[in-house]
Length: 276
Ligand SMILES: Nc1ncnc2c1ncn2[C@@H]1O[C@H](COP(=O)(O)OP(=O)(O)OP(=O)(O)O)[C@@H](O)[C@H]1O
Ligand SMILES: [Mg+2]
Image (tube, rainbow, N blue to C red; front, side, top):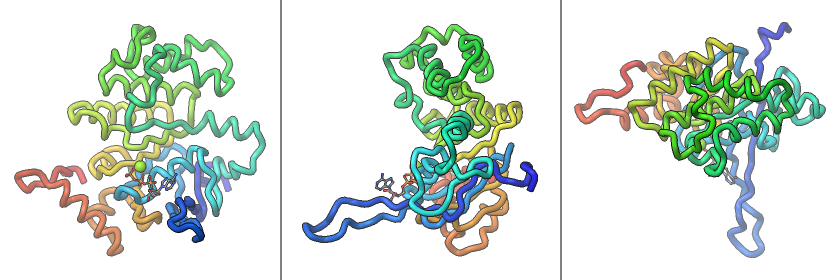
């Protein structure tokens, strides 16, 4: 198979079980099945969304996709190689290639470090050579920030600007895949579109693969071309945002879409999700 037909990242039958605290003195520890045989993939250059209710397993899947957790069953592959059984050299390539943007930029930066120090960390941690200062200036430019940001501390930025810095930090190791877990839900509505436009532009300009996790169907429709709906630890349906949200096939997907659209109705009774 040529690389263009092979997913760049993929889980096959991935399960994740968490042992919960014992409920009685002599009983077994109960097990929570957070992921149940999940087949998920993204092709190189593709933007894929994952939507689902709270507790559906989206962040758990994300932790598997960035290599933070090993699935309790099934496999996890990057470039068609099993990540957990690969050698250290491939693991380092994987860790450079898959980067994450989290929901809340305030809690993802060390408040005592300047932006320059925060951006230097991944270059050192991932053993990346070359001119570090030039690379830092380049990524700041790519996210629309000037080099005057370098001496500043996180508290000196607005939420939207700090999320740009978080995106810059993710871009530093020149990744192939960006995984964004609710990247705009902590931001003011007025700046959400700016950050989403930035992500869209970066995906095109740098030929990135984007995996976007969100509760918000309008966000996922705006940014991605294929979406997976997760319910109770499983992917229940996948398709283009338009077909999936207007015409879900399974009853379980329809019930999810209906519940989100009901919550999303504006006070006038009009849907807030006009572009769905
Ligand atoms: N480390 C853990 N130990 C025990 N249970 C966990 C752990 N991490 C997640 N869970 C449970 O696994 C299930 C899936 O959680 P997960 O955080 O993946 O959901 P989510 O879809 O990201 O939800 P949200 O939209 O609220 O972020 C939940 O029932 C959660 O309580
Ligand atoms: Mg989550």
